[in-house]
Amino acid sequence: MKDCLLALLVTAVAVAWGAEPAAAIAYGEDAPDGAHRFSVLLTMTGLPAEDGTTRDSSCSGALIAPRWVITAGHCFRVGDQHVDRLVAERTTATVGRTDLRGRDGYEVEVVAVHQADGADVALAELAEPVTGVTPIRVATGPPAVGEVLRLTGFGLTTRGGDTAPASRLQTGEFAVDAIGDSLLETSGRSPRPDTSPCPHDSGGPYFREAPGEAPVLVAVVSSGPGCPHTGPDFSARLDNLNDWITGTMAEEPAVMGVGTTPLLLTGLIAIGLGVLLATRRRARAAGSARTRS
Image (cartoon, rainbow, N blue to C red):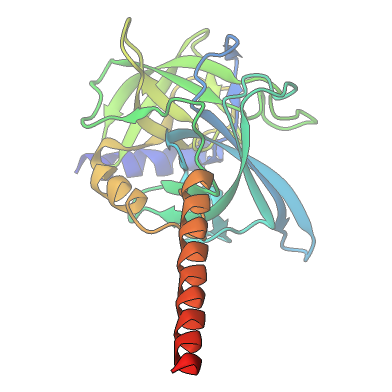
């Protein structure tokens, strides 16, 4: 019932504001160096365009396991349909890099996409694990109305014009206004009341902070009005997707070598070669015995 009410509200906002998938944070602030390193920029190059050409785009996300990034489902779509596959010619995850003009952090290829049923959420599978960044833990329960969450993203800082996506991770604080079965409604709180997600912030993490405790991921940016604006945006809850997240990450890797360390691969190759050589030596020995008899 709560989700139905939120869905009606989303529709009303869409009509009034021309709502569409969100991008970067308007009237946010620069994240401090080294802060929120689990934040991810997903860069898509060679996306098919309706006129037969290609274009580039990006989304935001969060590292929740060494080779898994969670983001918005609509970041991977054909038309209006969310798809369980890569759409762009190349999709790259930049992890642990606060300033995109720097060289810290990691750049890893995305090799597969997994869409959640009934939620605007997707898991992006990385070609190799990111071991130098601590993943953020996914919440096991919903936030409370009035609770303050932090958002990070690499999107635009204002809608339209010649504005480019932020070259530095942006952040702001948002208050939870309403909670549905799969959606959260949040409004800007700091640095300003009209701090709001913008294009390319889609999939950006809303997370809980507490002094002395590790951050906890609550939701990801889904949709909302054009930015900047006061009033609600809509994000996809994650606590009710824990079983799907855990089950998906437990599946077999999408490509050979994904999730397997180079040391382990080297050991397996060495064992295989050893068995082959031993077999050949035994065969030669057997052949020699037959000729002497």
